[in-house]
Image 1 (cartoon, helix red, strand yellow):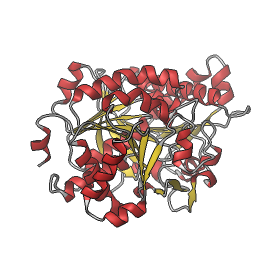
Image 2: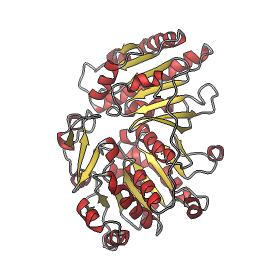
Image 3: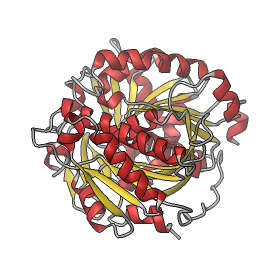
Image 4: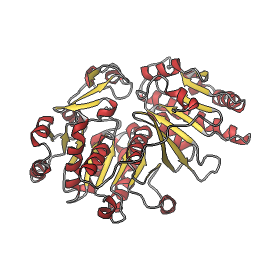
Length: 451
């Protein structure tokens, strides 16, 4: 079995370039039965000791919102941790839509910063995650436009083509990532996967041929179109990782492939069925910092909450407005009412600087609300945050050091249990989600449960 091969070391270490995506990967490995924990920074020795033996280790970060120089600084200790972990497979977990640019969240900059963990081979990019409607075919990425929506090529996707920070104007991942410094990307296409079938040796030889070239390619891109390809790709990744550490890039589809491959190889048994989420024991707070159409639909559809709009321009410019909002939310929660706060759209153009500033202030709003509740002797036990940057910054503002898996609310949406040295926060049930994830009733299930 897997533990026999690992000899006490983790099978995979991943870094999530935002917190919402990192928790999706946590859910993927935890539901497969792997002992796992998501740390909110490179863990200290004391934190690793508290966590105990782990088969999968995650580090949540905010590299997606950083310029290349800052990414290099943030990822340097991550690379050191990955190299020292002994894990055969190392993963830079990016958004499933690969939204990034040369100036912010650059995947090319991330690969450069982590290159030392697997210097002898190109990075391996897994292009899709079918269970959340992400499909990579012949190098081109397609994405479903919300649950049940039409599948669109990424450069024609109604949300991603007009993303406020990283608009996606190119669907071919090779061309998109070439702008970020990964100029030479070789494709393992869905047609090649189909022809190889379950013959992992054929695919492994293809990888070895690419690795033998001089100069070394920057990356290898593997198509992923349907779930039947998961075990095939997973067996390939694992076979290659047994030879020397392998750096992979992509969404949680990387871990989904690994798990399916392990099961095909008889290294991992089926995991037990998880219990559904129970109704909340006490009031629930949700903060929506995302401006996506899916988040707007979820706000409109929620019936369990007392809703409050947070005016962005006042939040950014008006002294005392944040404290007043926090006091209003804390009062409602103290009275037992579930509270949903959502930011308005700014009056000015939504650029990267404004988005970052709103996310930072929204995170402070969450932390101040929880502080007020705790001061009243009523610590919050269940919290939801929508928006990738807001989620990352809010978890940092709360002073957490780790997240354990609790349950899955929807594909790509995880409920985690907070780990903190502050007893008032430790054990908080925390939902972090990207703007496009989840169905219309998602927020209400945080109150009513998913049973």
